Image (cartoon, rainbow, N blue to C red):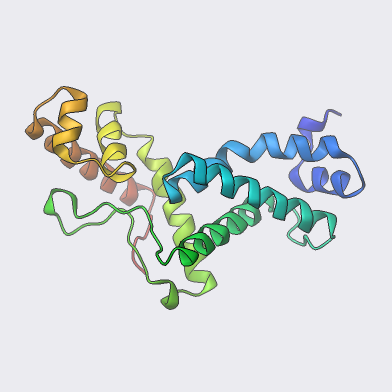
Length: 198
């Protein structure tokens, strides 16, 4: 049986038993998803790479110390470590940023809403992480021209003037595509029964 066909928890057992290749397979399996998760949060490639490296040092140390106890749930556990490192980073820098759709089009609607850290418990954080992950995935289902504008607006915080210039379209066209993107995203949210506010 090839290493690639093994489940995460089987790879972890092999790695703990001394098989370095098992961790390499585990890393290759999840590194893109984990890095994307961090990059969405910090919106800075170099910082994301630093946190990614720090996260995997922590993951390796935890596994080698025999402290890993969430068998079969490696990815959520790894993402939680990354999330905590991101929070630590922003706390040290005196701020905590989350991706937010800043009342785009002056609508009273945020795709990603910010909750103050002191008001969150672990369950709140995990629930919000799950919602955020689902929304990021749903954005990929939008038509390309709507998806591109939404990403530029949310992730890069570009103005509609800059978006219009980059896409070589009018500001009204950019606004229209954003409006349709939000409408379609809402339909996807309803279809997948994602609850944005508890």
